[in-house]
Image 1 (cartoon, helix red, strand yellow):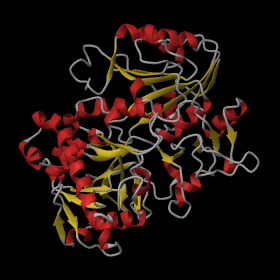
Image 2 (cartoon, helix red, strand yellow; image 1 turned 180 degrees about the vertical axis):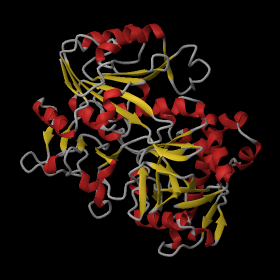
Image 3 (cartoon, one colour; image 1 turned 90 degrees about the horizontal axis):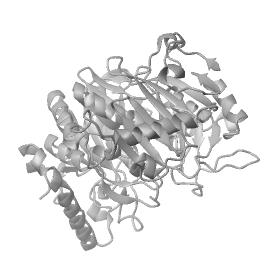
Image 4 (cartoon, one colour; image 1 turned 90 degrees about the vertical axis):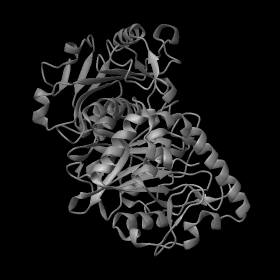
Length: 532
């Protein structure tokens, strides 16, 4: 039985997904919200937000992600970072999942990934849960109703949280599996209700496809000056570094908060919405993001709420640190209607330094920018992955290693070429700790971070006096209006300068050890910029 609107030549049956009891195609938000509540998948919260829990999985499960190894992928996938699955194991997994969904209700969303029509991906997302359909409808880009009549998916995601994989039969690690097949153009997701797997799978696909077309795929947020899309900036960073918060600045236009491409035409958002962390979310510091948690059809994940009043508890971590909300871009008043921008004038790399060593901002040469891009130093924020309960220092190359199917140098050289061609200024911004490491120091004040970024983006920071950092060699401003000068010199924020020196030496050593793996693949200028 078919409900909803779909190209009659592109039903599930035409894709080999048969025996489904009911297929709900391309429901809009009201119908999806109605279905979620009727099916008992969650509760309707204040303002009509949808409140749900994701069960055992409250973050991504990167160790359960696989790529099917074939002639197509053998020489193009970064196998040190991507676990392989045989075509035979994949075929058994797919057959078993398709058998599993027979007699069930499924929710289908036909969506675009990518705001630039020249580079977008037409994606079908098939889910067991109605709220997953609502989630992905927010996070990808929605075709006009008339476009659905001719929509032909190039890629298909099949998500079955109720299906448990068999490691012996399916060649996976656990009962959970996220599998990308670049020959079949299909993604299978089994045994996890964490909705973020849906969007990250699609972005991993784009991160593989686009570089072959000369398009830089970036795990970053982006914005541009009001009324001037040419004056654009991108912000690289893992979850918890402030991508969403800092790019949603009220005095600039938000292009997107998580994934973008950089083509010969400029930058473009992959998404149609945002997936924002809500732990300790403040109506004072982030009023618009806060407001979305009381907005009709916003998906509110894993937040504790009062069962009588439905008031959300933004500080409650009992379910997870990784509480989130998903909403369409139009919920943010300063969001771009097109998702497009010019070639970035500024490339900002965000890091959450749990060592308390790095300054709040530093100016990078192009070679230093490549060094820090390949290094991807940050701290994994609590809750973003299974088992992470406190910040953990890590090197995640390209500021997004879990989503990079190709070798890091592929992305690094693309970024290097585009920075060189378009003359972008490069900055390293630390949103982590100051005055000591995690547990002793305190988080960098967001007010100071915003002031420093504003000065960088409007060009005034370039007029400041800079000093050369003795440990990392980049340039650090000495004084910036509205920012405590001591904050700009992290050594001065520590009670014991000798302890800072020891911590800095430790971090420098970690950088050196990590970067050794890239030396054979990089240009001489990047090699010269490496920390020695």
